[in-house]
Length: 314
Image 1: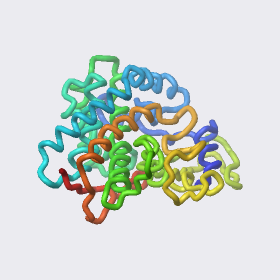
Image 2: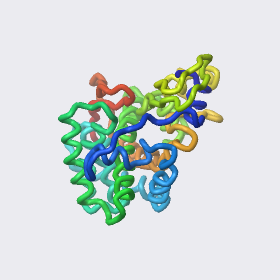
Image 3: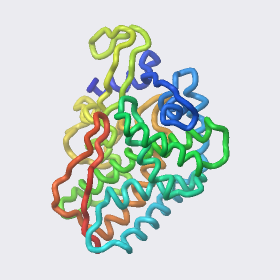
């Protein structure tokens, strides 16, 4: 589905559910998937989402932004004249800050383990990746704050959800906004520019649903059990919703942005993700310039995350 109205309908209509996942022994990747709100059935989703919402509610986005900026300054101070944003900043800084604020005992180690889990998070991955993720889940449980297993699983899940999405946002924003080929409009704040980057070049390009009952969408009758791919990248450029959809225009009125989802399963940490990205990008914008190296992205069916992104440091 690519039309904005159809994607929003599928995100909010109860006939469209997240595909089911299998469980596994405690402490494995399969157990984590089956315990987090992201893959929960409608019957379990609300209580598990509440764990995440409560955890995020205790975090001040402004403090996350400031802490991300502080760590970014520290990384740049140690760097030479060139730095790979994706390797040194886009994943490590947001994950370290978020893990520390959530009470993980070793935030840096937690961030490293989260990246391993994120690489295997969605079902259908290579068995070797899944086994590496099993070990990473065990590492995360060892440093997670004391709590019931389901609470700890959802704190880990929160970090995993933040990993590639925030890294992809930071990478895309660095690519689009930093000199020498920036499109920085005068007077626009970082938050407005990030919102437009999320629309034009979303780190999460699509998400999947399956129909629980027969339903009609996009002019088609879908029988129960039909897989549906919801394309955020296309919906965010729907000309029926966005005037001149290919143009970079921060501060669009009534944005209708779908990158963070919608409805009961919409991302509960959108403000926190934007705050972390803002902290990193504000420092990059004041101290770095993008090099002309070509940009490549990691191979993934639903994510868009740069493999590397070099900047010069001043």
